[in-house]
Length: 406
Image (tube, rainbow, N blue to C red):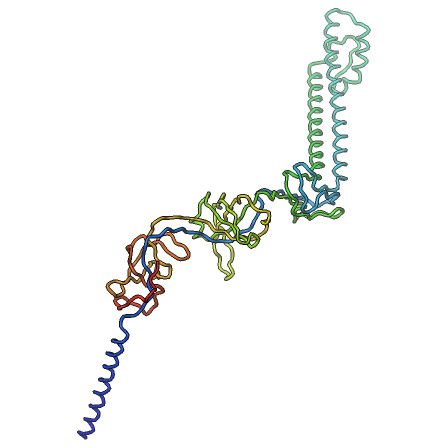
């Protein structure tokens, strides 16, 4: 029994010796953990925002109708150049012409009533003056008799009577006031008829649509003889010499751009060349649209004016935009792959005396490859690239040969 116990103890000691020897051999052979490193150094940095946008004309005209009507004439076709004032399309004017004619007749009838009322008032005033003169002289003239005959048809309109004895009481002030009121009413009716004629003529003119600007016809949705659509513009004219790019930026990027910022616009149609542009407008509010994943992501609209847009770019094309948002000289920067986050804070693993040290850093502007560090590191510090979850403070490390870079 004692001999067997000694055998067990001996076996255990052998296992421990082998384990210790393996650990000692492995530790001596491996040494410090090899890591890829980058060096903190001052560089010139430029931060850009990238997005896609659509080419749109700076100015355009859409011919639309509020109510459907028969298309009488289409005077242009797609691709045609037009001048301001040139006829584009016209609708059937039959009904509008009839309305103008009726309004003209109403104006003429109202003018006749005004003329009659004016003549009646003048006749009554003349009779009033003549009657006053006859009463003072005590005699009647032949003209008074003729005037009295003329008044016989006017006075009943205003409730007056003709006297055979004298004329001075035939036309009273009340009758004059009534005649003046009748004239005023007839003039008001004439004014109303004239305004209705103006409206009819405007409506008649609205059936002929003309170009309000010089440009190129880029869309025609009207056909002669067919009923016009109220959903689609009949004709669209655009100035293709001046183009904009409209884009939507996420809320982070939108906070970085400013009106007046420089933009580089590229497209497959431009191949290796690009077009310069300037931000001319940033929407005051964000809009939310469903993303591919079904999430609602706020975006802000940006309008970019192109400078010397080439003929290869046309409205509706999709382009790539690159907006310069910040440029700095001599800033401390680390490669992007050196950074990692815990919560809302940014960290790097810095190598100090051959061992890892976890350092919190404050960051500034960044680009595709580097990130500005405003605090937490100094020029010449070595930081680990692509740190894995296996790393921790205090681990002994050494840089891989040739891995050090800015």
